[in-house]
Image 1: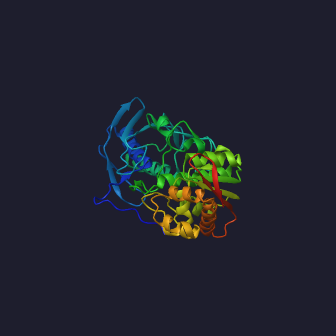
Image 2 (image 1 turned 90 degrees about the vertical axis):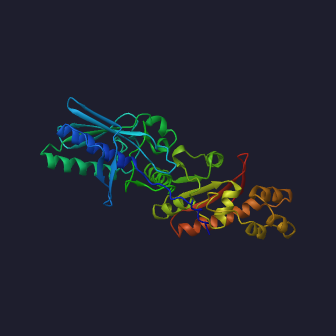
Length: 356
């Protein structure tokens, strides 16, 4: 079983998605475009009906345009976009509501994402939120609903280097994301979202064999072992469950799970979140796989690596036994989905030491 993460004594502070910030900036900018003044703070209604307010960091009214910016507050979540400024420029257009990617906002180049190739990387839920505020203000002010919305994130292209946008085929910057508008601290929803989109893009581009790795060493090893293209590599990290559960309902013909001995041991024990704070190696479980003469020493071990080294000194192939047990967990999660699976254990030197 996966151990739950210890909760801190103080309640963690939630934050706001890039989509919520862009919606608030859109409302402020379009209000200024139609009335000549910016609401500050600006209030929006999130998809689940909650009203929230944002202070403006930028408010600029020019000839035929208005620009508003909001500094993203991700709360206590470790979000790389925390502190980024989401800037929206609105101007009247010839027809319809048009979304444009400004500085630091990416453009989609591959199929499989919620928006088509060639479109700005602005997801459907934020688009709908922004359309709603345009329509609301246009009706109230008796103004045109034909509006161009250009979203910029200064420095966004540099920040995007810390994300998986490049692998997903999003070039030039960040994505405007969010379905609820709220970032829940340490929910890791952004990471799992990227796992899902990576699978979608792989399927849409005809990749039949993907690999999810716990870290860069194991990812490099599995890519080399199977000669996989970059698009086949899913940034699974600790979220084995997030990848496998999505594959169960959105299958790809083959998946390889790769990781170090300790992480794959936890997967073999049934853990689906492999983070050290949420699952631990059970040395009693490992001892039952070891030769009888080594079981007591295994139970007293401090680290999984210590056990792996002990097994190697005895000439005992413990990694392959663990990999086979981990494959059992993988298959249990996939629940008969048409996905062929295997598991690789990678040593610290990048060599494969166990297969299941």
